[in-house]
Amino acid sequence: MKSARIAPLARVHRAAITLFLAMLAAVAVAAPAQAAAYRYWGYFHLEKGAWAFAQSGPAQFVPKDGAVEGWRFAVADESSVRDPRATPTFDALCAATKVTAGTKRVGLVIDYGRPADSADSTAPPAVRATCVAVPEKATGSDVLVAAGATLRLEKGMTCGIDGWPAAGCGPVVNPVSAAAASPDTAVTIPAPTPSAAANAAGASSGTSSDDGSTSPNWPLFGGLAAVVLVGGLGFAAWRRGRDTTED
Image (cartoon, rainbow, N blue to C red; front, side, top):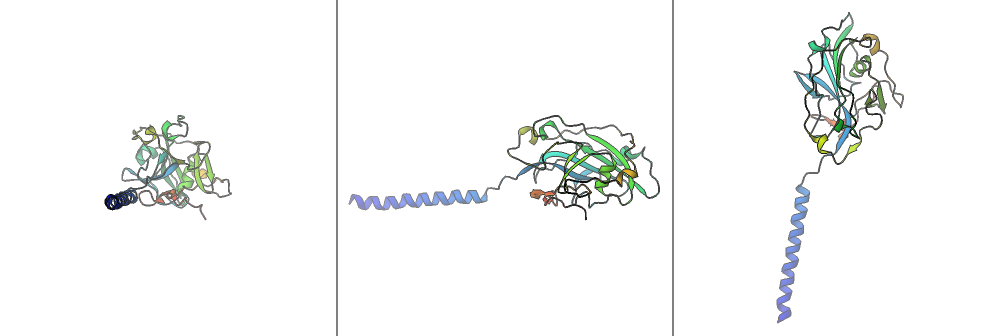
């Protein structure tokens, strides 16, 4: 009699445990996976007064006369694109830059990020901006070179600008520190003075990468994992699939 009562009770316990495990499994499936974050250089275009993440690499994009290009080093994932913190107008950047027949003027902002964006919290160079006169067919890569930027490239990806950072190329960041995840503060930069590097000759020189490619390319992540970001991050870059070099 006693054993007859225990058997049904054991079955109830087993059924309850099975239901509990099934509920846990359902929750695990429903819970969104945390997006991977990366430390990388992002490439942007200024559109109607706001930065837009580039949908192609700099070696494939040809900015028009009057365009403003932007670069930002930061820690970000698919849901947290980090724009350049300065948003100057083309007129503010290029009013003093002369243009001749066959050339165009393009503004450029390079934001090296915050100490929190670096691997060891080292203070980065200050945000800088300039304007260059380049051949009409010059690409985003040509603009960067014409501005006198020194580039560190790996397999066509832009891994460092002006020595920042000195090593690494789009490493995964996990966990992301509270400081790196904190909101940006806008930066104001003075109107630039055209330099000797800001001329059409600089754009034609090119820069070679470690693998012999000739123009800097934006890293496209696959999912941000391969970069980035297409469409909103296209994290088609380092998931944009990591942009390939110019043919």
